[in-house]
Image (cartoon, rainbow, N blue to C red; front, top):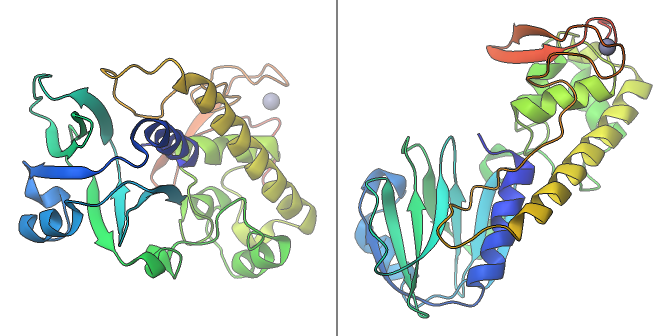
Length: 270
Ligand SMILES: [Zn+2]
């Protein structure tokens, strides 16, 4: 599932390709992808231009002239920018016809992705119950302390909770906990002030590095490749065999139902 850096990469790529393009027609081939009727979706979006490209958590926000189109890729959602004569795939579910003759196609093998239209001013107001953005001032030590204080769940599980901080998924949660040397099963309320300070710092550092890696990948995209935001990540612990610090075997366990990788020597339970 795409996490914050991948979503940001998709957005940046789309911005470089379709900024200020007008939607001249839309075909919805699989209606459950959109949160309103086909008719409303077409009526509201045809004639609008892609003006701004923003992200909130793992949501893509396309700022149009009069409204915002929100897209969540979930497991397998991808965007393709293709010429109109390019053969349709059975996994293409929404097609936006653009004024330069290209098509923006939303492709989703699992069909879990969703699109909805919201008012512009609703973007940042309690948007889907999301917590603060990791790079915002609201994600600070005071906030984290207060949030974690009465949480008895494992810290790994809390990191995945989008109401704590927006955009972190399974891969980066493992990487962050490795970076701060905390066992993923540690009760969230047992993190001390130093851990919290490290958590904030490492979260930003790791996500920033991943966004940067994504940015270098953008250049290699061609129009026939899906814009997925996936790229070669340099990971320390997630799906790895050996700890890069102590060379011990990385352990795989399940925390809150999710496969979790950690080093039992370097990461201590508190
Ligand atoms: Zn280790």
